[in-house]
Length: 224
Image 1 (cartoon, rainbow, N blue to C red):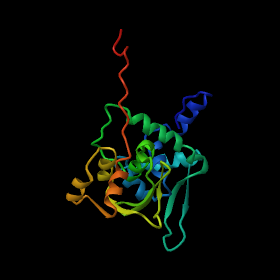
Image 2: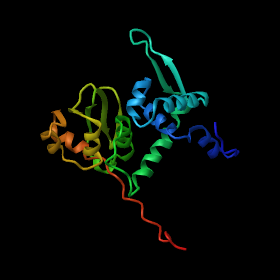
Image 3: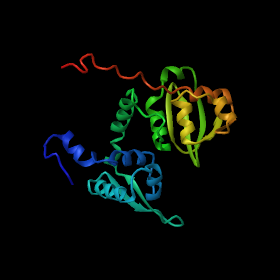
Image 4: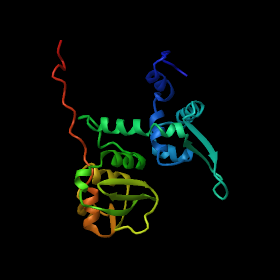
């Protein structure tokens, strides 16, 4: 493994998770364990060989572990260790920081996990004042609990007991609805999303996410 050769904790952290794809593997595991095929689906631009290498490195570093699920699944899954899960704060900060770039390639694909974590990071409490509700949010074949309580967002894998609405869509459409300002009516008319239950509440919920203002260019940029 390459190293910066420094005693600085930040440099050592980059020794452990700074290689290409490493932090994105962490991102893909923050919402729960995954099989190798699931990781490949979430990171399609990473080759199988590179993904295997990064997983071995993260496992050796104590960031990722693997185990076999009991029958009938009997599949091997990768998951973050307790220490590895502490990287969530760093991922959230990177999401918020990167969202301020004026050059972000918003048209490029995002995995379902990346969209869900972006929603967690870019939720606007101000827009949720006086609004308490629960939604069953399906992204493809994966259900998520989406609850707004006292202007705070809970967004995690699972299904709520008594949702006000059930929203079904795909990752790309969800990205457009929450971070791209796409109309719910337009997406429903196009067959990209369905809502069972209170559509008005679902529409308000999907509007509670905001991309921040782009970072201003430095006044000294380009100065000689």
